[in-house]
Length: 266
Image (cartoon, rainbow, N blue to C red; front, side, top):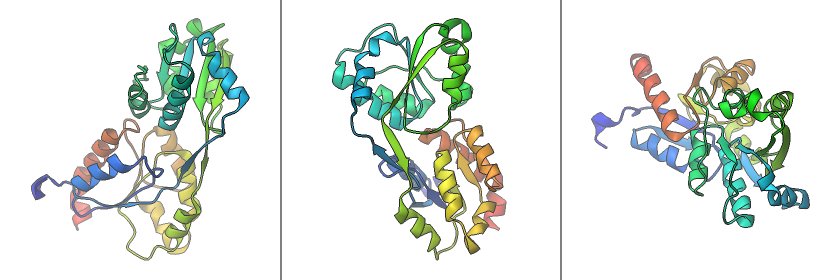
């Protein structure tokens, strides 16, 4: 990439995605000229297989819809499903929260529909496949990690669906990253990229003393719901990409850089 095509040159960024899930995004940012520090504020810990989870998977063909709420859920869920179902059962609506989750499922030859208006529970609930007239009396499986929002399940149950959770992982905060941030001695980054509510919360807990200036720096996020959460935690410049995919995040960042080029170079 030639200098004139390095639109992020001069920017210092933090990427907070989990280890092993940020390589392509970091490469894109560096190719565009940015200096990137990878500070994973979330670690994904697969849960040991349980008899209950195996029973849900063995009964997969009784569900009319399966919803994957993250790329981690897609990867671990697809591996678990294909381990027991080399040929996928028919008659299931495969649904994903966003483009990144959809792309992960595609790696396992699972074709999933995604909402057009966002990448959160509210957007999923707007899908025709999950409308009240479609889900009443249907069995729906939500593949996710432990904890998290209950909005999707509650709303589907209100619409008359029978909903089960297949929980395959838990999210933890790497202590080493918190220590690294709290001991940060270099200039603060121009912008931080976060991908989850837990990651935003972990970042906020790491900010003390001079690091509180980070609350004034832009925080790039994949949904309006996360932007609202960031605002509630004190971050004053949330930026919202179209979804959580690498390309959507890069596009949003490039647009922000173009709008603020003169200020950043001043």
